[in-house]
Amino acid sequence: MNKITLSKNPEVNRLRAWFALLLAGLLAAALLLGLAGRYYLKKTIVDSQAALIGALAEKYPAAEQDLARQIMDPGKEAVSRGREILSKYGLDSSSPRLETPLLQSYFLRSVLSYILLALLAGGVFYLATYLFLKKQYGQIRELTRYAARISAGDYSLDIRDNREGDLSILKNEIYKITTRLKEQAAALQREKALLADALADISHQLKTPLTSLSVLNELLSENPSEEKRILFLERMRAQLKRIEWLVSSLLKLSRLDAGAVNMKRERVPVSALVEKALATLAIPLEIKMLQVTVEGDKGAGFTGDFEWSCEALINIIKNCIEHTPEGGRLQISFAQNPLYTMITVADSGTGIAPEDLPHIFNRFYKGKNAAADQVGIGLAMARAIVEKHGGDISVKSEPGRGSEFTIKFYTGRTGDN
Image (cartoon, rainbow, N blue to C red):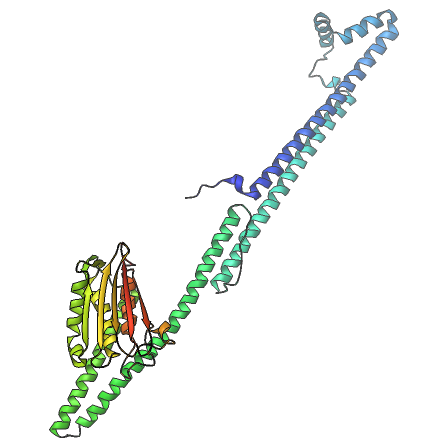
């Protein structure tokens, strides 16, 4: 959690500067008022004593020097004797008769001065606080309007602020969130478009076998001969297998996309992986009479899920078989180094057109050399599985000279499983 440091906020620093100036002004004003009060008080005392000396000197001229000396340096005994004399006539510090017009004027002047000083200080303090809060709440209202427009889907706003302070940091963080929301909204739109395309492709892929099944079912209802009935049933069985494989593959892809697949983390020996993949495809290999060679380090392996890795390898080998003519070659090699374990599958087939290479792993993509009954999800599934393992897959190909698929499972990387 970040520590809040008020000294880093320019707004607070400006408010502090205002208060410092206000305090300095108040101190200066108080000093000036004190000096003025001292002057008027001194003047009042001098006028009062001057009146007293003037009256006594007129009556006792010889005592003029002594009276002046007493005023300059009053003795304690003389002060005490004078207070006793005044008290006989009811005159002391609390007597209202001693409140001369000069003293009253001084008192009123002092009170009014300090009241004006207090009002001025309060007004300046209020103005400074008002301007500070107005600016702060103005920025907060700006952020509120910004958030409302973002909530309405307007991501074109830019609220970045390169100044210091917590509000500027907040603006920049909100802008970062806005950027992420914009990216997520764009990604969501792309996903929606991809989903619509995928649904269209799935509908198209299912439509063909379902149409064939419907036609074959109509033909069977016409009581054909035994020979044709067997032929129709075989074709229906083939179409049902195609639908079953398509639905199974789509479900696997959906699970991978949704992150519902938990890849195991176990030691996967590559030799056993290749052996099982070839055993699964033994019939199509035999039908096409392909020459298969396997070479590699028997100790090579990686950490991952054996079954899902085998699914990926089967799809790659199956793609090579489909694009390799009868009597062709299929070469599988593998090796391991400190960085990764690599599996290479190369065929002597028709190859892949250059314009198809960037899209060959895209879902439902069918290249120029693809067969009519191919769906285009096998390689997409292989890539998804390999990436779930934290690996990558690539292909090199030249038309007429075959293709070479390379899978790399990196050491210490487990993907997002």
